[in-house]
Image 1 (cartoon, rainbow, N blue to C red):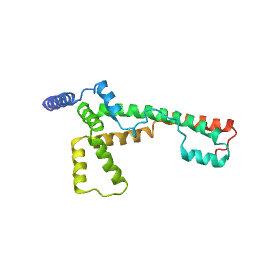
Image 2: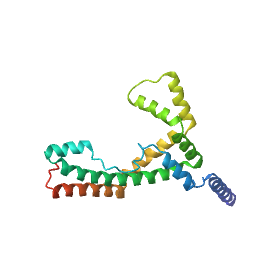
Image 3: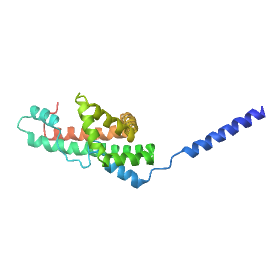
Image 4: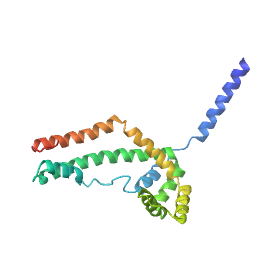
Length: 194
């Protein structure tokens, strides 16, 4: 009985030691900063420009003819509010993802986004998104990039983030505050909104 206990304890101690040995060191902040800065604008809107959403603008202008000059600033303020919140959450997510991926993968991804392979890869992805077929040479380029850089790992981690943010009550509350402020501004201006 004692022998089994000591063997189990020794096995547990060895497992913990192995786990501690394989735990990755934190990614240096400077590398994380370079990684985030290298990401394409489609991942993170660097500066909220306050451009009113065209679909919202059209809908509200239809409800309130000849009042576009009153509607536009309300929608612009709303857009800055939401973009700021989304950017903050996205920046935090990419910083967390960088820590999950580790220094080696983050360095490879930074090289990918800063280097010549990203524009080529993006063009291929854009074409496949449109339903276009790639040539054998283009498929080989796509496969090479996927093998050379941990793009799939980043995508997997980002999908996890999207699932988490959909349940994040602080994020949802902050976006809701932007929506309520927009609604209140429309009401104060005596503009129809629905």
